[in-house]
Length: 352
Image (cartoon, rainbow, N blue to C red):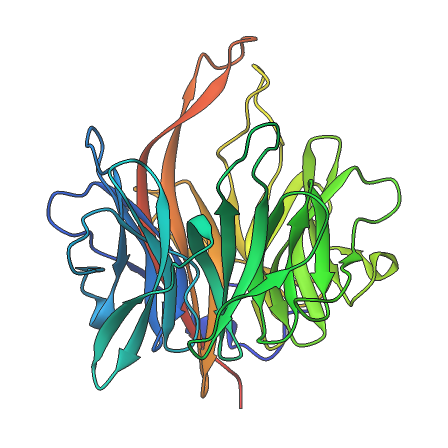
């Protein structure tokens, strides 16, 4: 298959795709991180009191994440040898947890603690675990969601901002996410955040960090555009290729970015389209490779990429392969439905 213009450093003929199996009793799933080089994500059950469960695929085989005494376990975005996540009480309250890969096995431990009524861990990096917490509400005052950064068993540092904070990434020092729908980069948890929303854009979100770069999406109206920054709003680069209305970047490593693009943002009935195409970029809108084209077309017609892992000369990208169906084509009620969604892994080799 021919590479798109500009992608360098990865052998375009070395790409392979693996559809990851689901645990028994599960019918859907997605992968959005890596632990010890193995995909991590969720497995889903339709019509269940516990519809989603944290899962990983060591050696390509599915294993549900476990935490003693807990049934409702979910994972965040894994990286290195750590899986962030949480368990859910019967009341619905979330409690942050972490799994660390040690001596050939995952070792789980709780992160949740006072004074937070709820906590959940979303990302890892640089020896730290990032997430969010919510304190108990008081009469006349709404409980805010704050960003948290756990490190080395110490009490979590609070990521400061005015308003609800969403934290999606950390490199151990910097933290990235959003506040009130505006993408933010914190030089450190206690520092004032740098807003990354470019001029003429209404909203933004930062999903991942890669050295000096930040990636995510910006929104013009409600339409997302794949975004790359270098520390300031003015440095914004739109990665969405020509002839595509929508794009998002979910992960990045070593100068590569992964996510999805879509030709039309919405269907005729105004709902979001499902015809996403998983892609890998290299820093510019015309430097991309179509991962979706590698999927078996008789089973899947769309996909998204969520994370990238590079170890030695091996490149791995994980995400979700789907089959969407078109309802009421050619009418004002035209829409998409997704009956099939499976975790997927793409692998390739770096060029010498």
